[in-house]
Image 1 (cartoon, rainbow, N blue to C red):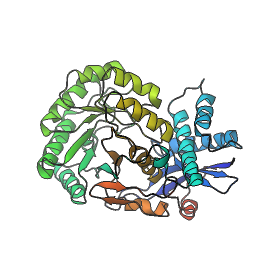
Image 2 (image 1 turned 90 degrees about the vertical axis):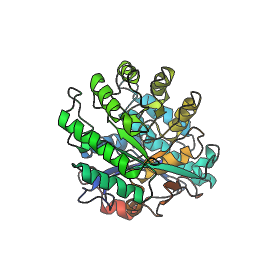
Image 3 (image 1 turned 120 degrees about the horizontal axis):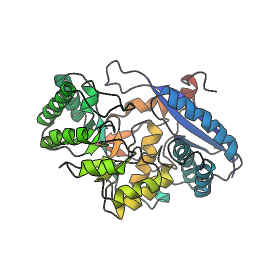
Length: 386
């Protein structure tokens, strides 16, 4: 079997139907075709939206020419070919994202070729379902944030995550200037979490995302202010470039830390684990190196008894690929999803995704277990990308 074509798709898709007035979102998928008629699907979908996605699409078109004629079943060899091709430009970020999309698609092809789901190729299930943690729509007021959080719990989520500082009017997650926050925004954010905890009760897990926006003293102060509300973790308290900054924050807060969506490959997770800087790790299967690398990172984290909780909240291939891996991973906490009701992904897919009691149900169909709807992709492709 040989790769005959690698075709990126940059498309728009609907936002969750429960989000009032939410804009349509932008996704990047990868179609890998073979000379035996099998097609595999991957995803990259990155931020900040259109500009990053357009850039990665252009790069993927070149990678497609580079990999034409390769054997899609030799997944490890192809992964290293892509990864090392960019060694002098840097093997993180865009490089690992491209490797991720290709890798996911090749695992999909291999599963189809052998007639089994990917999780069977990774060792088989250690659990029947994949527990999720989910987001809910932001609001600028305490009252509306509490209402939105309560509604997500009412829909079946048992663990919810939010960035109350961004919701209250703070910086976006792709901007860092001085790492500080306006005190009025901070106070509103703390009131939001106090209200949410009171509304959802003690049995619902509440996770906080700081989006790597804060300097050391600010991150310490924010984490300590939220500690009384029994938060599960304080995610990405400071930018990812400095392990020393993370260590300083960790030594001065009483809450658990999660990092990893901006770390790439096992090589960047190892120092975090060796220095005991995080209680959870959260690699993204579409950025860190694909299914192959996510499984390796999970096994590495298992040697430290650190749970893995993949950052998989982009498109449907993202969540499907992450789910295939974590079904086989002993040291697993929860898989991230944008909402507990995943109906809004159905337009992309030949089969809808199913969630029961806050957990994703993963089918036994071959490969990823689902396929993208080509008619939908063709009708919603972003213009001027090809």
